[in-house]
Image (cartoon, rainbow, N blue to C red; front, side, top):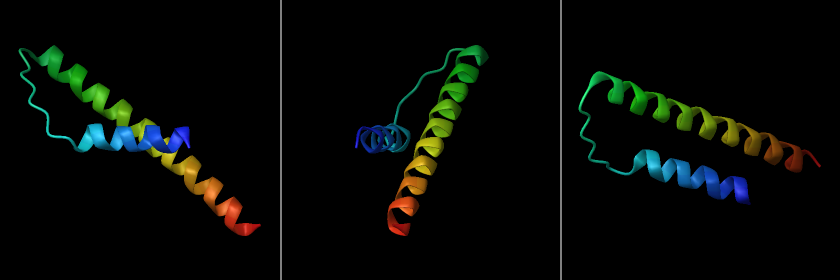
Length: 59
């Protein structure tokens, strides 16, 4: 349940409109890296949940 809540939170954060003022290329690169990390984390959690669901359905 905790993983599902975290995945939902990550999706909400990614989908929420955000106003960001990036002052330089370094800040832009940092923001892009953070978004990529969040996206990868979400995909990993989603994959884990899908595997658990498949295992539960197979029983």
